[in-house]
Image 1 (cartoon, helix red, strand yellow):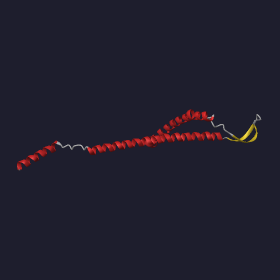
Image 2 (cartoon, rainbow, N blue to C red):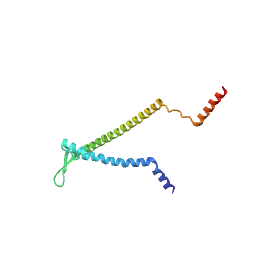
Image 3 (cartoon, one colour):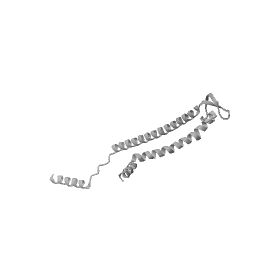
Image 4 (tube, one colour):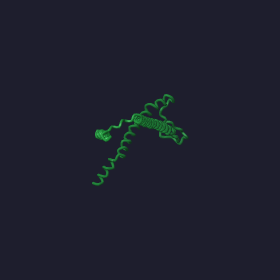
Length: 153
């Protein structure tokens, strides 16, 4: 029973919930980035280079035999997939970098505006101090004091 209570407390901690939300959001963000790469960027690369998918690029180093259909079999270096994965990584890294930079800049801008507003508010308060409100009892005591001064003089 203690194990279940401990597990429940562990799961309910803020850090675990934040991590779970981050993983879910990261998965959704990954789908957006993958769609952008496959549906937007690689078609533009295909329009420029004539080919969007580099996975089939192969460098046949030398023939090492024949297959069952008497087709030559080569020792081949399949460098196309490496290029494809590298390009995808660079695009994802750039997309995330620019996205994060914009978030950080936006947060910094928001913080600067909040600080400027706070400084402006403080300057207004210093320039126009609020009149000190005197309680009714104090006013009454001051009147009594003044009357006593008049009577004694």
